[in-house]
Length: 407
Image (tube, rainbow, N blue to C red; front, side):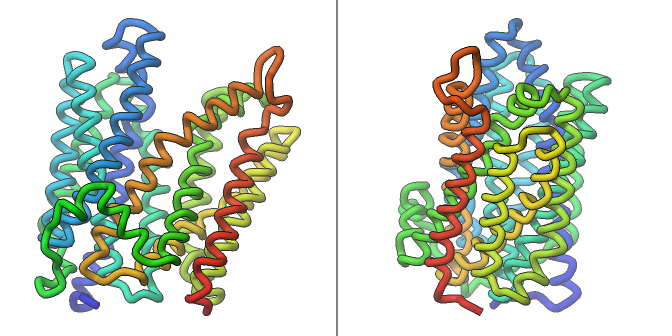
C-alpha cells in the first residue's frame, strides 16, 4: 500500500473530505435556482420541463462516459493532477453557466459539469490508496458524510443567494470550487507511486471496457449488481419524493426541503460516525447487509405510512441505509490491484450513472400509474414498496457475494 508519512496522510485525508464537501456543496448550491434559470431562458413552463429533463440526462450521460476515463487517467498519471484539473474545470464551468446567455450555453455547462464531476472516481481511488483494506469502509463513510453535508448546506445557501439573483449561486459555486483547487494545490500529496501506475488503454478507459473489470471475478460481479440495485432504489428520492409528499400528505416545498435536510444530516451522522465502529464490530459484509435491510425496512415503511408522522418516523431506520454504500465499495476494492483502483471507481460511477438514467424514468412511470382519479395501480405508495423489494434483493446478493470476507 502506498501511504504518505503520517502528517501528510492526515493532510491528504482532510483535503479529500474538504474537496468532496466543496464539490457537492457547489453542485447543491445551484439546485434551487437551475430550474428557474432554465425557465427564464426558455420562456415557458412546458419548455422548461423539457430542457430540465434534457439537462439531467446530459449530466448522467457524461458521468457514464467519462467516469472510467477519469479513473483510468488517474491510474496512469496519479490521483493528484486528475483531481486538481477536474476541480479547476468545475470552477470554470460554473463561471460559464453564470454567464450563459442562452440555453445552449447552459447545456454546454451541464455537459462540462458531468465531465468534471467524474473526479469523484479519483477521490475514492485516492482514499483506497492511503488506507488499508480494513479501514476503507470507514474512509468511504467519511467521504459519504462529506457528500451529505454538502447536500444539506448547498441547497440552503443556494436558496438564500437565489433571492438575490438566479445567477448568484453559480458565482458562489465557482468560488467554492476555486477555493478547493487552491487548497489542494498547496496541501495535496500524490498517493499513487510511479511503480504502481498502469499504462493508459482506451480499451479500459471506455465505459463498456471498464465495466468488463466488474466481470473479472464472480464475487466482484455480484457486488456490482448489488451496487446497481442500491443506486437504482436510492433514485426514488430524486424521482418522486417531492411529488409523493405533496400528494399524500399535503406538504409544502419548505416542509419537503426541511425533511430532506434532516435526511442529509442523519446520513452524515451514519456514514461519518457509525460506519467505522460498526465495521470494526461486525465486519464489512454483515454491516453492508444490515444497512441494506434497514434501508428496505425504512423505504417500505415510507410507502405504508398512513400519516405524515409515521412517514417522518420511517426516516430514522432508513438512515442506517448509509452503512451499505461504504462497505460495498470497500469489499469491491479488495478484488482489484492498487493500479486498478481508479478504473474500478470509474466503473462504479458508470453503474451509478446508468441507474441515474433508468431509475427516475421507472419510478416516475410507476408513480404516474398509482395516482389520479382512476389509477392503474391502486396504491399510491407502490413505488416505495418496489424500491424496498429491490433493496432486499440487493441484501441477499450482497450476503452471498461477500461471504469470502466474513469477519
